[in-house]
Amino acid sequence: MADSTPSLLARVRGQPWEQVPVVWSDPVERGHGREEQRSYTILTVTRGLRFPYAQQAIKITRRRRALGADAWSVEVVYAICSLPCEQAPPKLLAGWIRGHWHIENKLHWVRDVTFDEDRSTVRTGHGPQVMATLRNVAVSLHRRAGHSNIARACRRLAANPHHAADMALRA
Image (cartoon, rainbow, N blue to C red; front, side):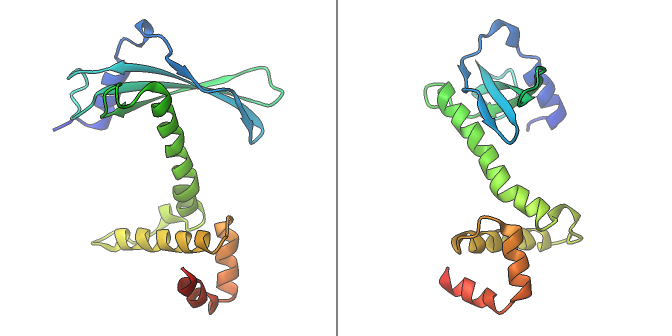
């Protein structure tokens, strides 16, 4: 069984990152009033992490600055991959990591902000799973109906609840 997350993070941070070159850098992206660039340092790991199936450890360095600003902020995050480098080369890993944030921003952020999921008082039995499933269904139905702003779609539906059946039938 793997150790707790903090000790796993300490083992990942403790790898010899300074001896490994950056293997992939994304181009600088501009958007949301800032510039951002990510670089990836990747290590093949064998048993050193004491985490089941870990094949690669990834160090992602994110540099950000507001457009027009001089100073960059730097954030370092880590990831673990269960595939060897032959099956998950650096460019593919970078795409997967970016894809994770796309999912996070597209679904989880909507659940957290629009549905205020973190303040839900449903905490026992199967209730949390059922509510998460219902929220996912609601988001999916809105997206299938062509709505990109889920909060606005929910407000419209609250004003005209009889449209919910129409939306479900179209799905």
